[in-house]
Image (cartoon, rainbow over the protein chains, first blue to last red):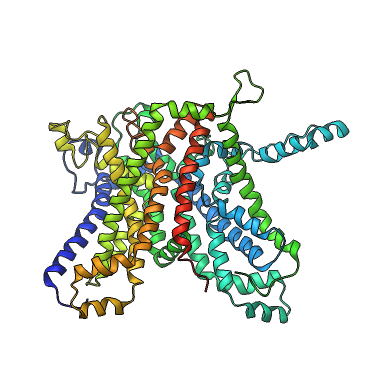
Length: 310
Length: 294
């Protein structure tokens, strides 16, 4: 603030307050909805005062949506994606920056291109790959004639199959196969002064030592940022878990996918009015973990967001 | 940009890159290749592999009026959500950047929508806009023609657009505020001394200086609107009523997994891939100029 502008300040506060209402009102209505009875909520009036059935509804949502198991699935998947991404990006970027092997630039571009096409765009064939992760290798073996050759010599028909549907591996791996973090790390490694490696080498540190004891501690802030972003990204996934977990009775699915089942639509059971109070309670439960992560890690979250999206 | 000092065991370097290459090959290049293959072939009805059909699948897709309708809808969706979320994000970021009291509290609040899971936001807004129980239920009861998103396609589309923009405004806000705060304070103060008012400074100094961020956000909100809309549409409307909210990714999902038309879905995927690649290419043209390795 440089000059005194009372009217403009008032207008600015109006804008800020309007923004706050726009953010908070929907969240408040979800909370109020979650505290009413079915009969109360299905009356056409504006519900802004909370009722007294909040815990009842939360319990109902927890049971109806099997949220204990579903939240656990979501947690495993999100931690898996975030950890996998951090490790994978770090070692890939390390290999690309600190070694000069032939074909390095080709590999760089091959990874770079993956940024262009999100999972949603190639969803149908990715599903086919998840149904048998060895499909690519099997096809390659068939094409180069190795399958026939082995069949001829040993009398064994190679039939590789690895079904990833309804497994954590299947939920996690396709989401890691992108370049997002690799570039963050590459950029960071490029800013590390050359002298550091020279000094480390003089002290007898090999590649593993250098990575573990120099680069990893130096990149701790990047790591936290990437972890936070990837955790939220994975928790938010909807289309992929929806497809990758067809066996709802045994493996279940993630909490986010389960949400839709709490509020029936035309495709789930022919429509009809959902039990909005229970649906809102479930909504609140599923919403909470990412909000907590963002509240605790706000600085890392914003840093990571700006670094990975650019 | 190259490192002067590197390690000499080249096979080790390749080993570090190998896991990522395997993943990218299996879950990126192979599916993308398969989509291309399916798009140009058709499964024989009696089994026994695929038959090459050239551009037939594409001809069929483009002859389908429902497909053109889904493209139009996706474009309308991309345009309106980008305008709404960027407009409100910029306004709030400018207001926060003025540095008034309680700024930090508002700032924290405006980040929230981005942290809310999209399908959860969708469910929340479906309730809020529900004609039987929500905020507009009184109007919906007495005048069903004014508000009824379960029956009226336009209302349903408006509801989906509002929900998506609400969530995405948080992201725009974060980027705009970061860009505004990167403007040197001295520039603002100098123009204030020259007599430029707050609004004049916003129009002639701040907004022009953050044009790179504006361009960047336009491109990523358009690309994101194609991919991230699925969860919201699926939870809110199922693509209905009467396909009124069927966007491109939703149609791919519907034709591929419900209709089991892999070739048609693959052809649609290829079209969407081209749109995405064109947009991403465009984005890198803008961003390239701003990435500095120092």
